[in-house]
Image 1 (cartoon, one colour):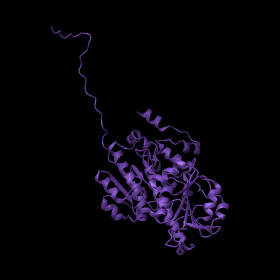
Image 2 (cartoon, helix red, strand yellow):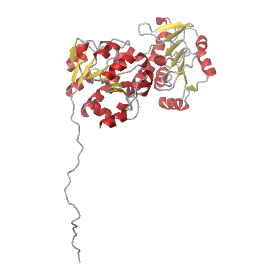
Image 3 (spheres, one colour):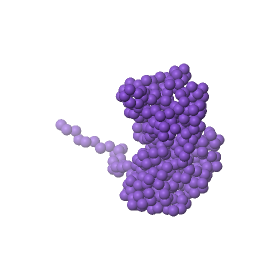
Image 4 (spheres, helix red, strand yellow):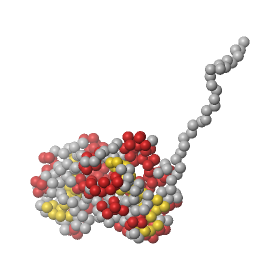
Length: 403
């Protein structure tokens, strides 16, 4: 016999509404792209193709006149993409989001408006306490785009610029070995019956890997040094062939350098400074007319004889060894570099619009938070706070208090 259902008066039978996720309202953005006038910068942060995508997604873009000419992108290209061309820099800085390919200068900090978002690289040696104070006072959200991580945990812009630097280093070395640039007249790859040039690469990171690829592709004889056996193994696996590798033993390194035609410095910095592993005595024992390309010069360089040079005057001779020590190598192939940067920043801008603004995207994406160094009056990078002796605020805690 079936039992009758029992309903207890102690229960409350009240229907509940289904809880659904409330998606943020898509936000229209106003993006400004100023012309770079410092740091010998030829790149532009967004190409006309990327600007066209932003315009078609409903955003407004203003570009300062001649902002892209260093990369052979002209005002007509941007206007045809739908951007407005501004002939006054202050007009560009009325945009809510500023995107730059060079670090902020002292003059540009004064043009920034309250509560703006600025995406640009950051060069600590050029950042001054007064500039940082202005960023904090104006409640700017400042993001160093080289510190932005993607979903896989890598730094996409740094990797792209490192690939460019690695390839460019070998091509530059090949130029300065030739008589056209007062070199000793050596073909990097050699020919039948004539041995190829000997290339020593110090550092087995991304720069080193792509320098190895370019050097092997041209037929050079390559030796790679690094203190990490893991990085040396990874490099060999990535390029798919055996090549001569060694840990950074000073005696072995000195011997290899004494026979080298080209030496590439591509070591990663430790605590913000590149370890100096090649002494002046080692450089003095190198062959006359050999070429040093110190890619690490922006963080101090790994050759004791290195000092920063410019794209206008890229080389100097020391012990009759040609030194190429340009900090911003990628700017020498600015069109390629601009497209690489734009490929990362354009989807980021669109994504911030989908999330309802950059603030919401910063809260949702830890990779974007990694690039934020000033957030609405607070310094959120410990290294910057220590350098300028200001209060450090953890960004995650700051965002948690605002929820």
